[in-house]
Length: 288
Image 1 (cartoon, rainbow, N blue to C red):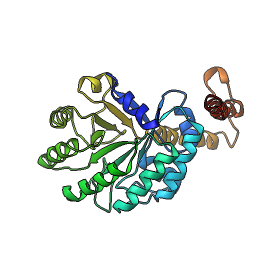
Image 2 (tube, rainbow, N blue to C red):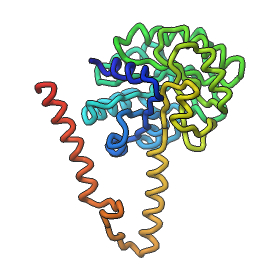
Image 3 (cartoon, rainbow, N blue to C red):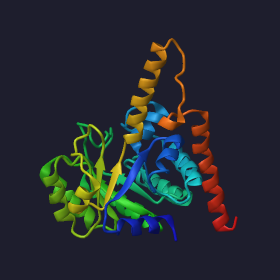
Image 4 (cartoon, rainbow, N blue to C red):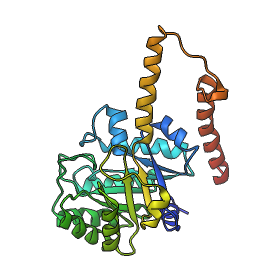
């Protein structure tokens, strides 16, 4: 069974499928202990790989190389990849989709933003003419073999949101995402116009959308939930706290107490050794 088919079947389950945003191999290693679905967040990757905001700096070879490393370490996990606008050009978008499918991605998200692009929860977003985006989307859909394709709109005008959501649902895209949905009522309205097409909801701390539990999302008819930045923001807070403590202790490291969840060399090494064991197990099942 291919990765796309596995994710498609998981999305078809009655409950909402959570996919957790990762920004590097270490964060993915931690997420893999808790969830079976990873989301390669453009926000997180731009921040971790370039140290830059999510406004269009990502180069597709960097993203493809990251996905290759992820799939090698996590052969059994769902892996959804944010490819922004397909890196501007439709032919490039198709090339990236082909490469990501070969690398073992489960699915991609393709947005309708116009450059200069923005994070989906930022102000100042502009969208392509719908016909232009649909042409690019159709090219991507014709290129993929089994990859799950999420069609995303970043429209902000009310009439345009519903018009685009309905148009995306009428394509062969597997899932529809309206990013930056501001309240529960708008989730219901989008759900109403996309019909039976699976719906994805993006949650980001401090973003424009409401904070909702998985049962609440299931009740609203949401099939997939991506959590773009919990790992990135948690690392930001934890690193800042650790270095503040180190400075206040005049450079003396704290004691590591495994009984209280302290992380030291042993715990970190065990985490990374899990990746080796997981890969060996997958090779054994494949007869390699």
